[in-house]
Image 1 (cartoon, helix red, strand yellow):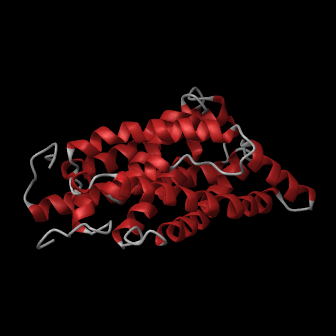
Image 2 (cartoon, rainbow, N blue to C red):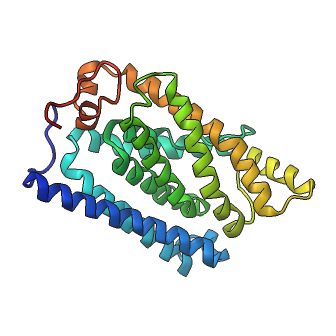
Image 3 (cartoon, helix red, strand yellow):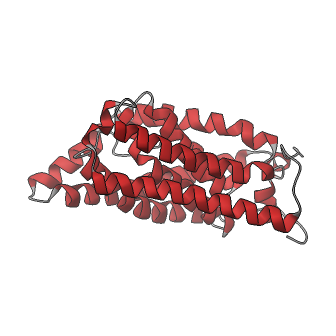
Length: 271
């Protein structure tokens, strides 16, 4: 079993500190999201040189760092090593699929995998960090960091409550996650970008606009079509990947053992 990277503090004090850091991290990400929706900065797509981009980058980065610091003492080394791999997987798949005629994204497989193995905070941090790193290649991704963090958080909560214990429940959890995150992301796509940058998803928005829908209504409808199906696929793929891991490897993750995330794992005694 891989050891944690740091020595644990006394349990009650450590748990309170972790919870506080998680709350502060989530608050920083949520506040940055609200800033973007309320201010609708058009210059954010110009890259990190603009003021609004720097504000968004700083807010999301602070939130992600706080979440990482909160969960780091509880993570085995194998999970920490896996996070950069998850970031690359998100970016490569997202960039490729976004340039095709497929009306999906598939840019959250790494995020959901970390969430299933390590919990909501680790998943949220991975989602936010993916958008931050990706934004240096594609600045339009940065404002969606809050939605990416929310995907990781919801995936971790679904795993904690047994939605990956039965294989057929994983796509159901993904579908519900897609509805929630689609609604959250729609105002960003509408107010910050005036639409969506994906080839196929942009065509869906244009179709709804031609029917007389407002921009926000068109993007919300597109999100409610694409996001639930996309997340159902992502959650299913992650379930396949998680169960493909050897049982010994799965048991290396404290979150998996503690909450009996996957069938065939046993919760820790006294937890």
